Length: 281
Ligand SMILES: NC(=O)c1ccc[n+]([C@@H]2O[C@H](COP(=O)([O-])OP(=O)(O)OC[C@H]3O[C@@H](n4cnc5c(N)ncnc54)[C@H](OP(=O)(O)O)[C@@H]3O)[C@@H](O)[C@H]2O)c1
Image (tube, rainbow, N blue to C red; front, side):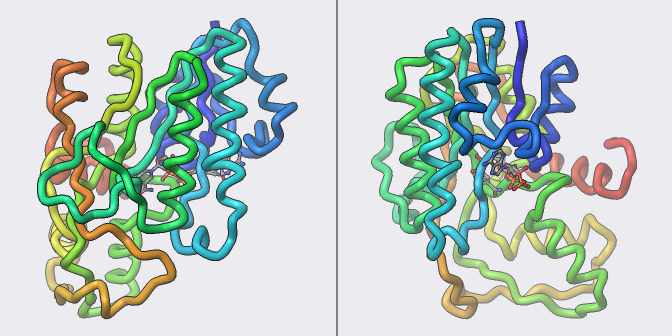
């Protein structure tokens, strides 16, 4: 039986390929998810599990260019119906941006969704297609992903610091749970091993703001002297609005997996070691 990892050169895709060395790991060049005949040809009765880490994650661009819907929404439907026909399990990944951020306690899987941007609406449509497909499906929502192999917030902060900037202004009024792609990949594998189905939230433990995360990245990443100034989201107008509060409740994950996610600061240290080409401690 074959396991597939799709979107294999993205942040999560790379981490999954490392977690699942026997899997076939394909990026867009090997399989473009918007090519429905190619998707149908690639997934057959010999396919056991399909991990979909492919997505258009350019949140601001999604506001003006509907092309993201081809991969984040429509392609998930094609993938799910092919998985149903082939008897394969589809493991699909979604986002905290399905919530509007007006909540006051961490979001559970059954809390009402109401995305505030086009990316969130597209991802919500994609997860709904997967869950309604009749296939064996596990949809895992995650948040504030960082890892090697993709543009991520810690990477941007470290590059700005390395370019000689002595002060960074970072928004302090959005709260979330940063998540290491390697920890998410491990969690997906664990959930599959435990037979989990349906919707599950996974994020590393500990909530913070982008400002709080930037300070930790600089302190742990070798730039303790760069100062970080907390600012309001309004100071950085961007095309796509972001939810102010997108903390995910991971209780269901903890019940299913039999373990709690580790703190994001521990994961951040491993990311920094990986980024520097060192073995994690
Ligand atoms: N990044 C975050 O902060 C975050 C937060 C919450 C949830 N998520 C979700 O987590 C998952 C993984 O995200 P990520 O950050 O790892 O994404 P990423 O680093 O942007 O990687 C996405 C991968 O998908 C590939 N891809 C895009 N369109 C494709 C297509 N039509 N066919 C095949 N492959 C295609 C990309 O290839 P190209 O390089 O060729 O475009 C890229 O390798 C996504 O479902 C995302 O929505 C991410």
